[in-house]
Length: 123
Ligand code: 5GP
Image (cartoon, rainbow, N blue to C red):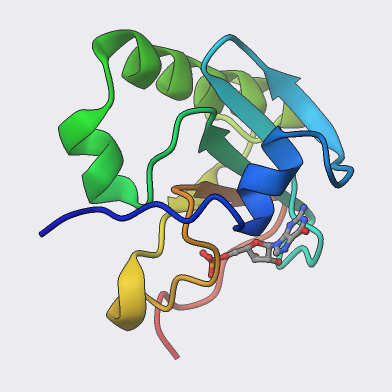
């Protein structure tokens, strides 16, 4: 299966600076910004700056530098938001992929949500 990337998706447009975002942190390979419709008191999206459709595309095809930078930015978000287990009460990190995953934006992103006890995973 090919991972056909659509450059017109909203996160590609955010990365190109065509639409604004509320940036939390970034590094050479990844950007973290607040979800426009937060589902938790803290709801940050972490995206790679490269053209990856989904988690499986990213996991299969990203470089080690991209993967490391992405994961380190996730850790930084947890620290900055005060939701990591080092000094906070915890969080949920999820990614939706494709039709069954109900993925809305076809650019890989991890939702990091915290600040309250999360509800059930499905339902
Ligand atoms: P998905 O269902 O693809 O995992 O989630 C996409 C997320 O992107 C949703 O939580 C939605 O609120 C968020 N989103 C959609 N459009 C925008 C936007 O223009 N800016 C920001 N910051 N978030 C967006």
